[in-house]
Image (tube, rainbow, N blue to C red; front, side, top):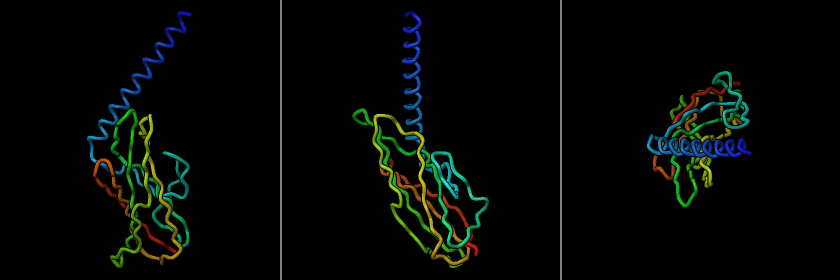
Length: 163
C-alpha cells in the first residue's frame, strides 16, 4: 500500500513538472518571432516529423509535390483554462525566368485550434499539382500569418519542372 502512495505521488509530481515545462515553452514561443522551423518538398507526408523528402529540386511535369512545414513560435493564447492557436498560410508560385507570379492562394491552410492541453508540435501540408505548368524554374513561397500574434513569416523553395 505504501509503495502505491509513493508511486502515485511521484506520478502527480512528474505531471506537474511536465505542465510547468510546457508553460515555459509557450512563454518562450510567445515572446519569440514567428518563423519556419522546416519547409521540405516531399513525395509523401505521413504525420508530424515523418515524410519522404524529394531527392532534389527537380520535379517532372504532371507530378504532385507535397510541402511539409513546421511553423516556429506560433502564439498560444491562454484563456478560461483553454489554449488557442490560430494561423493561416498562403502559397505563391513565381516563374523565376519571367519574373512573374503565376499562382497565389491566400489562406490555403487555416489552423485554428482550441484545447484544454497546449499544442506544441504543429505542422502543415500543402499540395501542389504540376499539371498546367510548363518546364522551367520556379519558386514556391509559403507565408504564415499568425492571427493572435499579429506577425507574418515567409520562406521559399526553388524548384525546376522538367519533362
